[in-house]
Image (cartoon, rainbow, N blue to C red; front, side):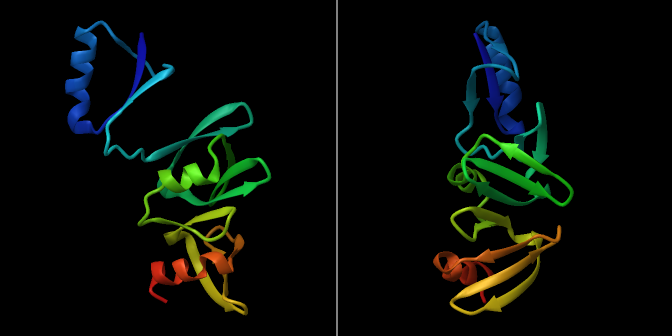
Length: 148
């Protein structure tokens, strides 16, 4: 049996030793994943064509759902992910990322300019030059997040 591990550095060595003693193989391509309850991955696996790309969370400007596809956008590149937007919302740290519409989640420090608009909206310019809107549904959550 093969297992992939998602553990904090503190407990990883102990768990690896115990699993090896039990005859369990540890592999990155394993079907089963052993995850620590409080574990938070600092990277996201995405696709760039047929290649798998590891994108650090701090490099992500925003995630956007277009139809059935979800894209991760950094300052320079755009990658596809198999995760749905609600899964990304649960995965991303709540103090760093905020959902601004049904289809967009942004990283808070990727905002370059906030411009108020009519009808309880904001127009945002991100550090990569992309312009996105905070919709009316997420307007008050956005204001609370940034204490506006």
